[in-house]
Image 1 (cartoon, one colour):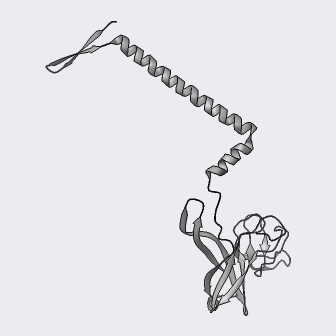
Image 2 (cartoon, rainbow, N blue to C red):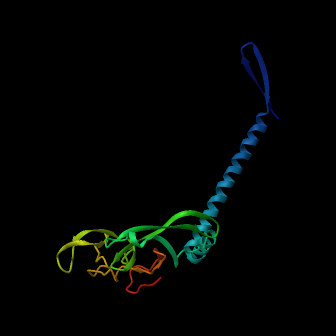
Amino acid sequence: MSKKNRVIVSGENIEVVSENTETNAQNIKTKNNKNNNRRDFIKAAVASGLGICAVGTPICAGTRMVLTPVFQESQAGRFYPLTTVETLTEKPQKFAIVDNKRDAWTTLPNQKIGSLFVRKVGERVSAFHSLCPHAGCMIQIGTKKNPQTGNEEEMFYCPCHAAHFSLDGKRLDGVSPRDLDSLEVKIENGKVLVKFENFTFGIAEKRV
């Protein structure tokens, strides 16, 4: 076994360090082997995972479901107090729906879970979901040309695919498969409460 002395000179201090070159070389070799083994293991694990996903997509999908909170609590179907009857007019007003978001693991307080429009014509109060039934884009209000009459008038419209709806929620063209989704309204002691629900997009039937 060979040894090598290394002399370190620092100012006036001289230090002699004895190094076992053979032992050091062996340690380096062992360390390199461990690194190589680790890399080989990782490569094998990745390859195996990809292989399982390639031939067993349901297995991967099932694993993803297990690792995510699947028991999400829905706020659909609840009545939310929005405003008072006396503040409403024929011009639709937009309201945000705020509630706690819950899943299997966490609760996020005071989160926006959706929005809707409310208007009052005479004694009747009506509410409409703010998402277009066609593809779920956000509905807006503005002056547009009525596809049926050619007149410029205020209406609901979708900026994504140019769907148009009258202020009473009726579709004015064939872009959307159905009218705007109306929401149930009830009045309690002069307060307006709306039952907020989400509906399926892209179909003629209004379905939760």
